[in-house]
Length: 410
Image 1 (cartoon, rainbow, N blue to C red):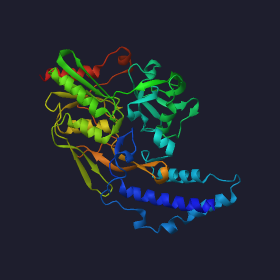
Image 2: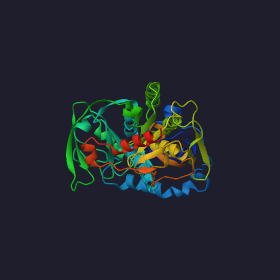
Image 3: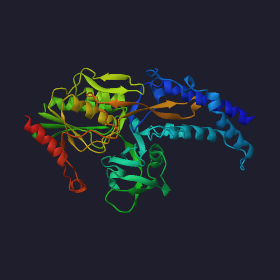
Image 4: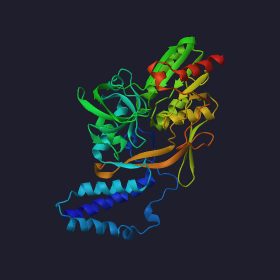
């Protein structure tokens, strides 16, 4: 009886998944996500989206699946089976079969915990991370954080957590394992470029208060704004920082998007609108070739001031949306190194019955000039490298180059 009940439930969830492909709307661009339900549910229908049922007899298609389901219930040696785990495994396998590393499944607990970093406060090691690669990677330790004190640097890949191999583990789930109570210790096994063998780093977790925007005045009357991620509080923090800086009548402004792994696309559009007066920020292009245009919001605080944008190989997703729009509109030059190249759009779609969510790539995004930067990245107008030796010596040749450009344009 239990088996038949779960066949019915799984059938419903399969239908929900098929419908979800046709009914997803707002999206998150980047490695940091939050439940779509917070924005009012699944939302509007995508242009020309179709379900598998339009062209395929799903009853015949899924006949081998139900046969396999019954076989394991009839013959598998260890009974009874956990039907909920089998159901979740089926969804996970379907997402993996897409062959898209950005499309995946999270069970209910994983989905809930994957959103902690956007809330503005949590307990952990204090580092911005990139969840778009094979392993969880450090984008940048937060100033004064346990991660910084432990010596973690941008680009460090976490291949084990407390001795548990993270190979094949979704980076979002690895991030969850790094989180923990303040005062507890986590052992991270690090793979670092230029270091032959992996090594262990012990980090004592702490209560972390996340500020996504830093603003200050530099020498030569140059304002500096660093955006570390595109989260829930970024709009408010950036507005406050720009209001304070613009009162001081700076001669130019440096926008630092280095080591920014992404976040909310809506936030990215709002951030870009602070620097671009009008025009296209990006296009979304769907599988049927249709496009949706996103334009700048009016009322930006820094649309006229001379501007230079800093980027590097860890600038990804939503930060590339901002940098690409600024570059294509001719608003400012990019300085640094070629960006990460995350040009696809994902939607987290909650499943019925609080059974977690699927993350589906629903579109590619293009810059205002129609450039597709996925797996290519944005090339800076002025390439300036920054070495590990520079960082150890507290040197920043990329920032120096940006300031030099601004002073030269006065």
